[in-house]
Image 1: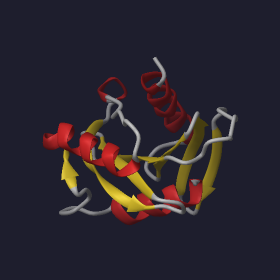
Image 2: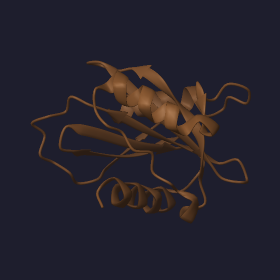
Image 3: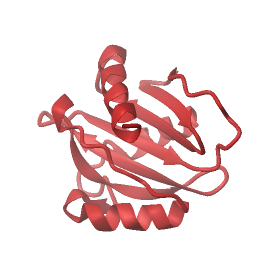
Length: 141
């Protein structure tokens, strides 16, 4: 999962004109569409408190089905992506794991039947962990 998330991040985060399929201005539509495609209710974390605003998202192919990819950006243009997939049932490990794929850093974890991976090539490992903790807290209130 970390590798596929890193590849998606490296592919779409440099895009200027088309970084996402559906912009943040259509957030309700984006969440409904991706939830339907993944077959699970999704929530989009609000990361303004850690300096990131939602750019939007897109649908991606995964190993076993569709994947949601949400992109966030700081005012200075640093981007992170949140890769969300389903069908990871049976995995009881919820601890954060860390991987580096080239220049992209990824924190990933599994929670129930959902898998999450937060990626960035623009910020430090410590900063990415801070954002990952914020994402986790919002997805698991």
